[in-house]
Length: 208
Ligand code: GAR
Image 1 (cartoon, helix red, strand yellow):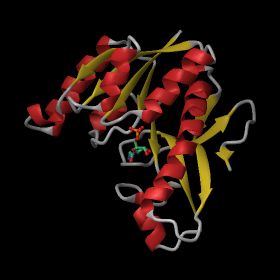
Image 2 (cartoon, rainbow, N blue to C red):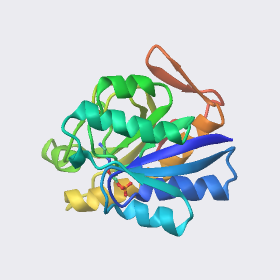
Image 3 (cartoon, rainbow, N blue to C red):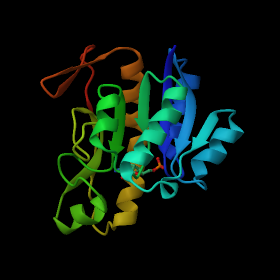
Image 4 (cartoon, rainbow, N blue to C red):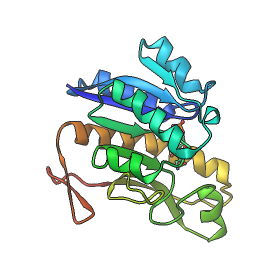
């Protein structure tokens, strides 16, 4: 059984989608903990309701990024994860932290990377006149919102869309692609070579 630790900062709808799929589809894995950098995160209530272990490492309690990253790593390592899943985790992680978990840490970002790393992705996509937007699951590397791409969803932009409507439609697709990507990881179906990911069964790595 692969051990999955999720890192969250907010409501955790992606974490919930992954946990539900893991249980319902009987993956060879279990979500062993939900770790938040925000004490009031909605994801923590979900963890409690579903009997999942949880922990809070409040970034505000640490004087530096390195001190926060070290405390976070200590808590995470206590759960002995095979895979770290960043699910709406809104802190930038330092390079030593990322290297510690490289190859076993996934993130989801609400844009078609490498376009629009960082914040306000949907607003920026609308301002750029994009005709399609989407979400990306990728392995985490030290550069923010970069790293080998596992799976993407593509969502057409409709006339009259604003950033909230786009965010909602993209989020729905996130709940499809993130569980699928995590499932592929725990089933050993992902190979990374030269910065590119191959799904060894040959499944499509784009959701339209
Ligand atoms: C999701 O849209 C996720 O893609 C985004 O935050 C939201 C979290 O929602 N992540 C990032 O912007 C990371 N750069 P959730 O808490 O309901 O999963």
